[in-house]
Length: 236
Image (tube, rainbow, N blue to C red):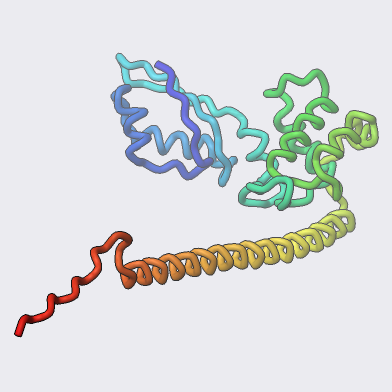
């Protein structure tokens, strides 16, 4: 019996979902958690795919730990918790080409790529979906640079360490980008609030007008109302 799991490296915990997955196998959940945490401790903080091969007769099991997804490796490399939910408007980080090569080397055995350059291009493409910059550019532009050979020297030498001075400049540039993003975000929030306030004012005005009209209508006699009759003169 094969059971596929996606766990937090080194910190898997019991829960209803896990019990539902492992329950039918009839194995000791506590023992499974302990062994998986030990097997994935080197991937602490990352989402890690794990496959359990269970012998339902003997209740014995084997653990196969796969390499974390490219996105998780990138986040660990750049030291960010999550990517950007607004890739075209907000950026989550600024990677160096050395960062991308490092992730590509780690993931290369699991990628369907013919060489390291192809793997680097694939990893850079994943940065686009995370809202990442690479070498101060949007990821799509860096992918083009990679494919056109701009970083062939770094890739051929498998350079994975970013020089401290270069890292400093990348961080400074991203701090400027992040500051501009925050200003833009606040401006958009102010504009959105103004629009909502205008809508609320328009609604209030319409309500007041409708109420006034209804009140006036009630005060006017209905069309076709019978006029009051003049009393007949009294005979003397």
